[in-house]
Length: 253
Image 1 (cartoon, one colour):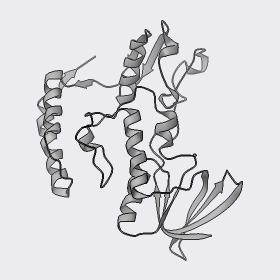
Image 2: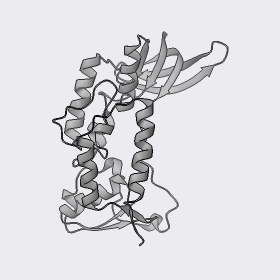
Image 3: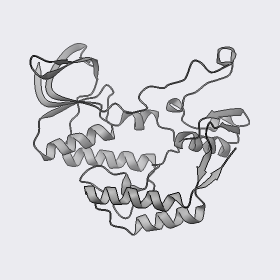
Image 4: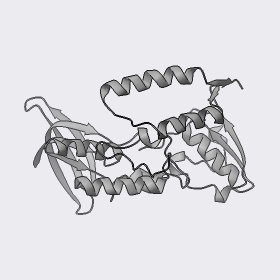
């Protein structure tokens, strides 16, 4: 058994950010990662044309902003390079091949007890810590509702966005994308570029910004020095909410 102040489950961007912050404060911790690398969802499951959906000024990890020379919305490859530099800079050493099988709080010792299987050496490991951080990512598991009418009789191919890579094999095929979030819209555009007959199923009205206002916002971000203090974050949220609220165009379908 090993003891740390903090146990982190997952070595994606969130796990890396927490590790860097803990290192800056000399707090002992361990990162348990079930795959063989950091940021495994980005490396193994993200689709090819993925770009960051937030401007670089709002999408960097603690203590290491993106260089001013970077484009506003980083590509998947650029973001992975950034994460690798981050790991090297802060000397982050996750324990890979660790599949967590249980995590329980021991009230008598006031500690978390985590059991993980080392799949590389085929043995169980035990960790105790005062704090437990779950950083496995919101897309760690592919969720497909089982109550969609007609799903039981559907004979075509069904792919969750987590497993989508590219639209090259869907040329001239009929494809329905369910959902109009960032992934849905980007995958729909990718399918269109590969010649698929693409439709998007949308539950709620779509909110769009005109290209003119979007470009102005991007230019504003590129020329601002953003200081991430609590006051600046609150001010930025209020400012952009009030500013964007006036620019949003509602398209009711």
